[in-house]
Length: 400
Image (cartoon, rainbow, N blue to C red):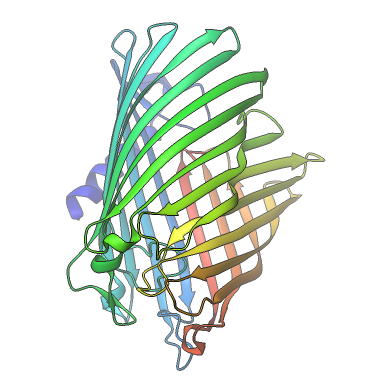
């Protein structure tokens, strides 16, 4: 742990050095250090620095504790000719003062290669993680699991503003043996393999906006629960916005057909969506939204999956100088579907406010107070309320 902290600290210190000695990326949001053909892009973030009033998200007798998360990471890239190689390594240190069982060291690694042949641009990537972070909002336990993803494909330039992208990917996620949540061994219900194929047709409408159509075929197979195996396909129109415009991010809304290989697994056909959109208006206001609607597998044995529908929004208003005022909130619904069991629904919501302060182009400080709550028609013991006071500091590639 100490060696990783030392390495990241050296990278951060080097990036603060004078630009005359080391050079700097032209993108101020992505400070970097050039050492000959090698470019180093560090980032350092401290998040959730404060009081968690319900560490285990319990319905009764909640436990409070002081906590913080430190996330240093470093991207190393090199461009020999038409080839670009990039490697990213990050570590997340999760600290709880009293409840030491919740502490963890989470690691992630990634590599990508891109080859520019003008009209043809093949690429390949790999990512791997070893983490105890909560996998999603359904599972409150910090269960150790190991996601991996392998991707390969190519971009084909059809015309000056048109391209096609073909991608094949294969992923795995596995949980440590014996790790349980609410009496269910997570490895038994969630260890899975996913294989997918994507074809996209993209058209640059303006210098800041690209429209696309993505068609996906996906297979999910479970190592120890074959009754959950499924095939699905989706078609999704997509809009992508440049980081330099007033609207940033991407949004996708489409149709998914989900079918279980076993007839006892309920099917789903209907609307799906996902996106991360930022809107800057009147020069002083910024609205950031994250939304999703899709099928997601559950740890529950009798309720294999649920349809998640959620949105989170943050409105920031510039007050004086670099000081901003923030209002934030979220809503999420998990509609469970089962194999003979009575379906149910869990709802999560949050609301809060905070302040933020940006230090130049490289750092941002945020302090938020937010109240989270969960209700359930399945089991009252799943319900909880959790107010949190948390501060955060991010330095480096803030938009990465």
